[in-house]
Length: 295
Ligand code: AMP
Ligand code: ZN
Ligand code: FE
Ligand code: FE
Image 1 (spheres, rainbow, N blue to C red):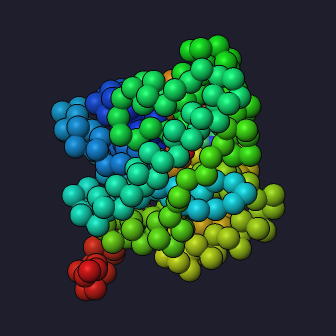
Image 2: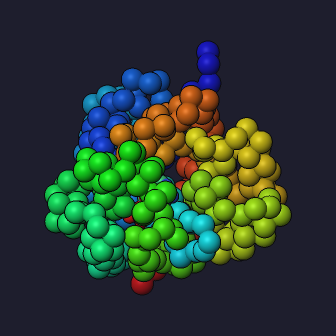
């Protein structure tokens, strides 16, 4: 029998994916995955629908979230697995992050307008249709209006860090993001480490060592956009720092058309054993939280 596979990184229309939680889960099952984690940005609002759909489809479901942390020059995202989506501490922090988006987003629209693009925040928000409005929604409207040929083109020329319509938003410090996930009973995993834009694996080694000291549990070495060499190199770093290795597609539907659910760019296979390691960490975390309950 072939080894069972999983996908531990996916987005729904509760953040910046195009598909409902139900269709993501049903598709993961149809593609032969044994488990699927939904990891929307800054929100847990899609998890209950996804869980019900998973029960009906007969696929194992993992509560997830993806939180952006303050970092430069690249991007640092921390995934949380097995978080308690009813945690009040988590809900209040997520409210703050949504407010930070609400402050930033109209500024992005202002920038685009001053660059001559007819893009209003209200239109972007209604296109997004949920609480977490992100840059990919701006990009979608820009493509619809022929200001860009693709979502990636909109990012490259306008929305990416360093581009003319980029506006900073308040993010959690890496230590805060990790603590938030831990306090909600979750396992904290560094998403897509290539996005840290570290030129040398040596630099990645140091940074990941520091994150491990802050309590990071794992690294998403098996990522769609990592080359086989990168997957190996990040897995080796994980081993050296006592971290687990996880993986996922980062499926966003039509917002990232090159990333397919479960299989990524075609060659992704995340073994079920990766999820077993996440579960072992979650169990240890639950025991620790029982011993030292957070305020
Ligand atoms: P936001 O949360 O609004 O800052 O947007 C984050 C989303 O934009 C995530 O889905 C990212 O993968 C995507 N994103 C960020 N930077 C880029 C980029 N340079 N090219 C394409 N997508 C990006
Ligand atoms: Zn996203
Ligand atoms: Fe991410
Ligand atoms: Fe993601």
